[in-house]
Amino acid sequence: MIEQTGDGLRVTAPMIIANAHTLLDAGRRVLRSAAQAQAVVDLTGVSEVDSSALSVVFAWQRDALERGASLRISHPPASMISLAALYGVSELLPLA
Image (cartoon, rainbow, N blue to C red):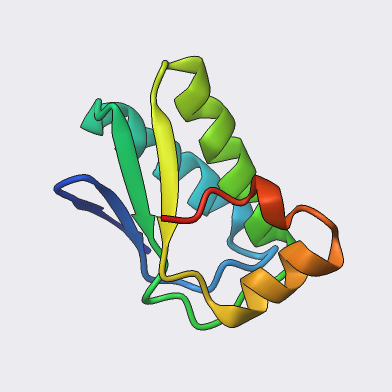
């Protein structure tokens, strides 16, 4: 579901409401243990998203900022980009 990488994490599960809480907690654990000044979240393996995916990403971003770090999203699915545009939050999505 979440794999640690050298500079952050890779999500390999659908980012949907059914997985949101699990993804949020697992991602927080990995990102905190990485202790990187800049972490990258690779979404290459994400096949499905809903609006909860944005909530999870924004929560990870807030956590990183609270630790004085930054978070970047790489390879977001087109559907995530579309949802961010629909909700007017595209400029808040920290794309790598």
